Amino acid sequence: MADIPPTTSSGTHDVNDVKFKLLVDSVKDYAIFFMNSNGIIQSWNTGAERIQGYKSSEIIGKHFSQFYTAPDLEKKHPEYELKTALEFGRYEEEGWRIRKDGTTFWANTVLNPLFDLNGHHLGFSKVTRDLTERKKTEERLRESERRARLMFEGVKDYAMIMLDINGCVTSWNEGARRIKGYEASEIIGKYYSIFFTEQDIQMGKCEYELKEAMETGRYEEESWLLRKDGTRFWASVLITAIREKHGKIVGFSKVTRDITDRKRAEDLLKMSYTNLEKRVEERTLALRKANEQLRIAVQTRDEFLSIASHELRTPMTPLKLQIQSLISHIHKKTLGGLTEDRLKRMADTTERSLTRLTSLVDNLLDVSRINSGKLTLNYEDCSLNELLNEILERFKSEISISGSSVQFLETQRVIGVFDQLRIDQVLVNLLTNSLKYGNKKPVEITLTQQENFAVISFKDKGKGIDAESLPLIFEKFERANAQADISGLGLGLYITRQIIDAHHGTITVSSDVGVGSVFTVKLPLVPKGQA
Picture 1 (spheres, helix red, strand yellow):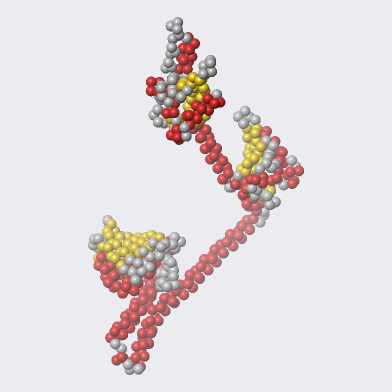
Picture 2 (tube, one colour):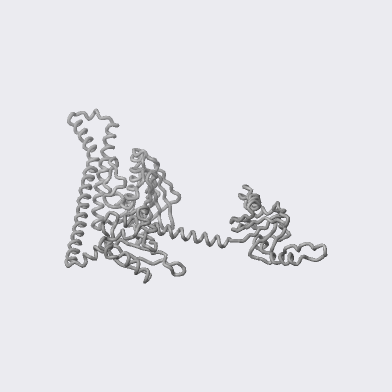
């Protein structure tokens, strides 16, 4: 409540002052208060209490700067307001202010200096209004306008432009630039007839379109228009009259779409020989597709024959050399000159070559069996722990030659019913694959049991497989990261997957280039149909 003024010398209240203070106190939408010349608050009305949160007993006698934000206080903005109001007779602004509870609100403030009849400065009056909701509404409107502008400018498939009441271009979006070829700086301010053919201009079509849009609210058609380079395009055009709140037309929106391709297609359909042309085109495409498939098949065959001949020749060369050396010693009757170590090395080389040759031939035979549906399985109880350990012992020499180390992590004993020879083949293929592409880095094999499945993973830290090759590595004659220094027919992983499929299991691979690959095999411990 505003303070009641002191009594006069006659002991009566000044009635007008009382009425004025009651009037000020009754205002609820404005914070109205008075300050002395130093900015100390002297009075406080109901609106001030509602807007700023302080009761009169809490705020009277305090400096009005406590309503200001820290940045305003740092630059001494309250003092600036008092100085400006005193100098110019008034100060008005909008800005953030702080309520008692610490929240901010957007305020319109008017500060006026007060003087007595003799011109002595008594203090200031300050009127504050909370405009937070108005500011939020304005910000939402600005944001909406910004989004609409971005959407308008960013549309690429439609030329969206604005025309003033006289048909001159006032705005230009990306779609208009792309479709019509003009930059905004070249076209804004020009009459939109620039897009029309000379014949249409002479016929007065531009004026007719705008007149029709003004009378009916819109004009729509399809017709030929011109690009900046003089070429024509078949356009779908929609012109809409834009009216202000009271109905007065202030301009036009024009949306244009290039439908030249559709026009050409429609024209072709109207021609009498369209169906024949279509059939010829379809037949041509089919023949091209078949020819391409045949070309790929021939190329695949040639590549396979090249790889196969190279791979089969590779183990035969050292085998032939060892046999020739042995025959030479026999003919020269110098067998006694062959030491036991020399004979052992010759035998080892011969055995590795024969093993490699046998493996290549077996792979080719396996592919033949798979293609003819003759891959059969002989199930028996099998300990995967023992099988993996036996394979690692068997491949000690290959592991050493590869430069990689192999760590086998077996947390439990896993026994299931498998075709042991075929699972051996799967594990050998995955091991040799990891050694080939492991980049001489450690290989980690893990064996676990998850419910009724055995899970085996081979993890290497090699070169990895790129995203394009990953879906193809289980296909015939495909080799991930095919390199001249890495041998193979590209059949190992194909055969591996076929064997796992026959066991009703799964094989998956995850890989990152430069990080390595993980092949994971999941086999049911008791396949379908087995006791």
